[in-house]
Length: 266
Image: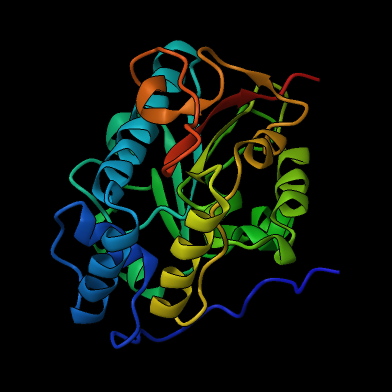
C-alpha cells in the first residue's frame, strides 16, 4: 500500500540540500547554498557525469516543448517538478501556450511566482505528482488548463525523486487518465543497469536531502511508465541522443538520463 503524498513543506531549510537547488547549481545558477553545493560535490564523486545529465535533461525538455507546440499544436503544458527558473523556461519556448508550473519545493514556488508572470498565461502551483488527478481540480490549474483539449505533461528528472513505495506509476496513470486523447507525456529520469551504482547514487542523494529522494531505476522500469502510450520518434533512450533525433540506449555501466515522449491514443 502506498504512503500517499508527502506533506508539502511551507518553509525553506537551507541547511539541507534540495534537489531543485542542486540542479540550479549544476546548471550554473545562483540560487544554491553551501548544503546544496556540498551535495553536488558528493554526487559528482559517485556520478561524474552529473552536470552532463542535468544539461541533457534541460535540452530534452525544451526541445520536446518546441516540437509539441510547433508540430503538434499543443497549447497547454503541465510542467511537474519544474525546478527553479532557468535561462529559458517552458512558456518562453511555447509562447502562445498556457503553462502551469508545479513543484513541491516552496522556494521554487516563490521564485517562480516572482519571475514567471506572463499576464495570465502562466501559473506556479505548489503540488506533487502523488496528488494524482486531484491536482487537476485546483482552481489555479482549472482556470488555465482545459482537460477537453490536448495537454502536454512534462516530467523530466522528476520520477527519480519518488520511490516505488509511493506508487508513482499509479499516480501517473490516474493523471493521464483524466487527459484528452492526443495529449502527451514527456518523461525522463536517471537510469543505470548497474545495481551497485544505483545504490551508491541513492545513498548520496538520500543522505544529502534528508530522505527527499526516490531511486535510480533500470531502463525496463522507465519503459513501463509509458505503457499504453504511442511513442514519438526516436522512441525511448538516452535523451541526449533523442535530442539529436537518434535512438539511444542505456549502457550497462554509468547513469544516463533516459526517457522519451509518448502520446495518448484511445
